[in-house]
Length: 410
Image 1 (cartoon, rainbow, N blue to C red):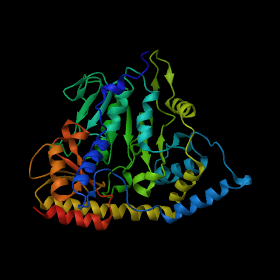
Image 2: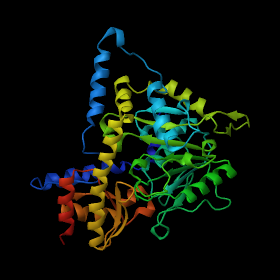
Image 3: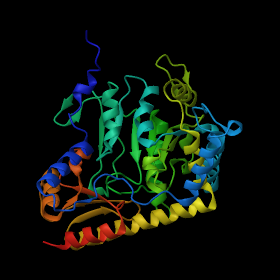
Image 4: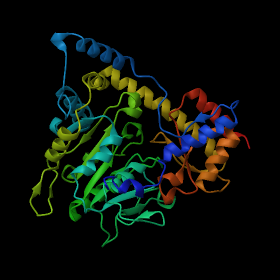
């Protein structure tokens, strides 16, 4: 009996970061005396802020008493956290169009970015800026929207190339090019590029005039330091009618092992079903979550709530500053070696093309064997990433200094 989802067979056999881990494991087995400095996957090194740990302990103690025990919580998230998000991430920035009911607490950005496809029509055409975080494309392929793989491109997906010649800012889809759901990520993973308010406004205007939906991945917005760069797509008037925003606490507060983030699905999103009747994406996403998700645990949501206290906000500023100092060290060091470099200014990622040319996997192997530093091959993010590598600023300061010392060696 044929019961397996054939779309799984369409994907490349190995996930990018799994392949990186496999190669590192092989290298360490052959060279057990060498310490590899991990700068590939974007995991963090700083511990949870003290106020978060205190909140978790308090919440855990509540769970141990009958009077304060919490069982199943609301799938959309507890009101105390949804309201804190609305107040501090939106209203405090002058964004009044987002309310607590628009916010859905999740176990992280990656899950929601993949699962949002559940509320989209089967025949829509995704459009992805490339290089891109693999989940955008892979999740659409698994949902049956990929079409066929032809010369490294999926026939059912529109690719929007972001090249260094244009500061990794893609052009709007050309006239006649289909783009129903557009994935934008800024600050960008992997290139570290940011988007200007003027450029973001153009994307919103495009979506409004073409009936498209934007999924705006702003997991790294806390790393923006350049004045005038938008932190949220909802800073653009009218974006709440055409955009979903996804955020995470992983890289700002060390929640990679705790798992919590949120997605904003505004009630004012205006789209239709195939028969032309109105579709309320906010209610659809709520229904999806109620069907397939039991919500984030009470203890974790209390931990996330602590991030919106004065102590929590200060801890995030300190964490971001720590990682950005690491990224700045990497950027400066790589520029001194003659590499072409992007990122490391408003994003924790440093995207670079070494002076010594080669394809991405050759460059990965060269860096691993020559410097004992693991990176992420740029081609793993798409064809436009060929010849590039990505490093992260998420390791410790001490190991980042060591990595820079190694990079300076011939």
